[in-house]
Figure 1 (cartoon, rainbow, N blue to C red):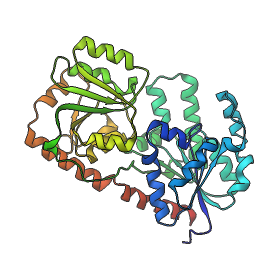
Figure 2: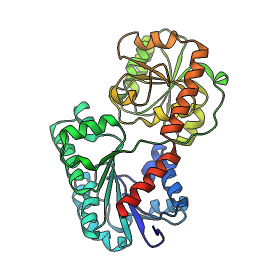
Figure 3: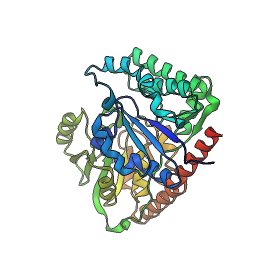
Figure 4: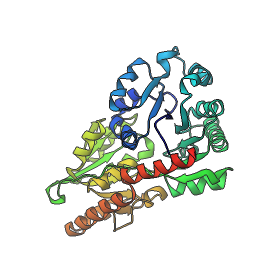
Length: 374
């Protein structure tokens, strides 16, 4: 299995770039896997929807190459024109990609670019999804056109790819019921770095950390209502369209809250280990990375009792589950003893180390590439 003479092509999600990752604070987290794979001899070509500024991110890699699409071709202001133009990307770039042996595409938006390149280059295609876009579009009620589009993209990807990964058992079972060509699907969970963290008894006593976009899916209204008139302060890391409304609700409910905004992922890790408690109250999720990171950092996690969260949190063993009903979270939170929480913190961290470590994910990734190339 000689890796020296060829590359793996990593195609970014449509309209995303290294700059996008940096702006969202996830850059270091996103590139960690590829840096680990480089250590094992793999080389990558990163095809991004960035401009020449994306070239500076080559410094994070030893033997890999960054090709920003909009360094080579003009960037249209209209999203519709960008979508139409994207169908010609394989024609513009395939001659630069002749040493590619596997294509990996993130998510479904833009997957048509990966499919066309697969046909041009005659190499295997790996489509990775962190969450099921079709399911999310239905739950978010985005409109019939988008729901149909995501259904079509899912089926198109399954038809043309050689390998399709999902991050949860829930997503796998759903896709098997609704689509064809599902024998290609495997579970590849998200991964997190496991590090030494601050002892549980040296953390903030009456503060909770929450992480995620300030949008309806995350259901922050529920947390604000549950901790009304209490001495518990809620720190929320994230931005979104509902911030003003959440600030007004917190004031009305007399809930102590601070909106921390977006921060770099590495800084967020350091912040996280100062907290004893993490809460996620989402209506639906994929394989929530912030939940995994909170457990890896030794936080006691409280998670809404939805299928995807229940795959990660074993109630009263690695964390606590609660129904999205009035007083359910409140009663669970205030009735737990300190010594019980220390055990939960330790069990949660051990569970993540065993099942969600970067080391384990890298091993799986290497197996997948070898199988595709062979």
